[in-house]
Length: 199
Image (cartoon, rainbow, N blue to C red; front, side):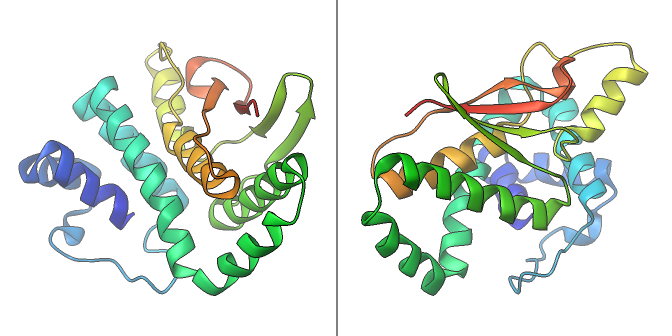
């Protein structure tokens, strides 16, 4: 959450951050750093509400920029906080073939994300690359509810944070730039959120 809020402040300005905090009912976070001890500072529902508020307050392009930057920085921060574990992982990954590395990274990402957000993730591998599916995506849950209530759909997928975080993690593991795209999104009217990576 701290990374997300700091990116709103950095990219959109301090006034925009204060506006968001007021709209989200989170004024207690104004000017206060959140704990870095791994304990959740907010609920998953509040997280989803904040993401939806960013989208509804600042628009598609601004939200996408904030979400992409936040996703990359969140992946880097996880590696920083768990440096010994990631160092061992990096050493072990270098010994494996690329396909196995990709699968292990995607499985690890799914495990960590499931633990953090409580939503099941499914991994598929096929001729068109790898896919991670989140049937009950917590990231777009609130914007999906708002869209349903207002009888609207988003024109594009919403969960850029996941795509960017997954791309950054794969880039770290493979040593090259990796594009992960969200090919379906609940907020855009599809049945689940799906992310594709083609090696």
